[in-house]
Length: 326
Ligand code: HEC
Image (cartoon, rainbow, N blue to C red; front, top):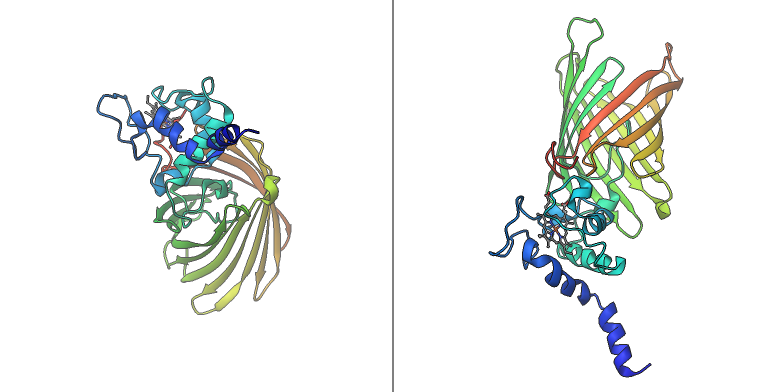
């Protein structure tokens, strides 16, 4: 190979080419610094997305951004203003330019969207979220609000109702916080420590505090494994027991079948084991609205052990407005 050919090959391979492509193709709209401020001559009907700040760029997987760049915003229910580059650019060029914009965050503290594994019925997600979730579990409803703070922290507020014929249908409320302890984009794994507190409210007659450890892992992206260990401390009774939760999911794109198991080990009384087969479904084209349907099947534990239907709807409001992205 001539020195020139080597140099040309190097120029093509060099990570700088992502930056060059960005400035040639994207900067007029998304801004020189990629923070979403277009050049003065450019008019778009919706503001171009911020591609640079960590809070905006890390929660989504790179694959989706490559999809938006290749197929255009409209393919994901976003604005037509975001053009499709799939005809003009090679898949490598799209890879480079997306890698470039995603490198602009420059902080490894933010877990990447690849670690945002699908939500199950039982296992708490390890990934910090901006999300609203409505759950129906037999005749009980949960209303969940989750909000991120910074790179690793998230708070969660939850209220519960039960329309089961008993007089007080307000079941209770809890407040929780969780902290991403460790994550690795290479290992595709994330571990989170959390604490949930449930005060004496509604049908809840004593304080309850539950520390937990949760993890998510996708070995070789073949399946997703999520797990959680929960300890329960109750006012007066002290340590009431432990619960071990494990789930396995297989990603088929817009649908993700999943099965979870929950093993409850109280300090006094009978153990209980239940299985939770479920089907997670992406509802919006953007993927920020999703639902899941399945059941709780008690296998071991106190009678009566009858199956219960479970379903939830979730909206990732950090990603896009509820009516956008369809
Ligand atoms: C003509 C203006 C324009 C150009 C050129 C352009 N974009 Fe966009 N892009 C937009 C607009 C506007 C949006 C916001 C769409 C919306 O919110 O509905 C957007 C959205 C995006 C998104 C989605 C972000 C998210 O949070 O979902 C990505 C990723 C993106 N652009 C990357 C790029 C890249 C990379 C390039 C260059 C290869 C590029 N864009 C070129 C206007 C443009």
